[in-house]
Image (cartoon, rainbow, N blue to C red; front, side, top):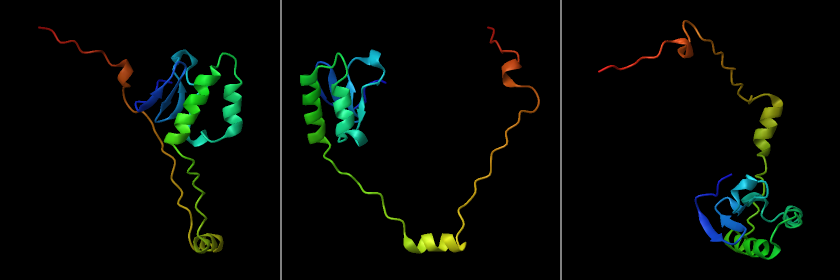
Amino acid sequence: MALHRDIFWVGRQWAVTGAGIQAVDQRLRGVLDIELARLWDDDLVQSRRAKPGVNAADFDEALTVARERFPNAAVEAAAPDPILAQMKALGVIETPVVPAMKLRAEGRLARFLPQWRIRR
């Protein structure tokens, strides 16, 4: 995965971006990246630090910068409204059902049409 467009800090191996902590080496394809939502998950952080080839000092500095930049604002899930929950249970309010889309191709398909050429 390419580095996010908002780059706040770049080290030798790690970068702090708008997506979280990302490995500078793009050959890893985002395998070791830590997204913002999991930045404060200590188990994930320790598992990334324990990977072979990880520059621990650079990782720790990136983690410090990222945690300062994005403080732990754990947003609790909004409690469901008890009145709406009771109305749904009684059947007064029904959840909408989205109909499935039916797609079909009629006539000649575009990929089988002859290509047009412009001649001068």
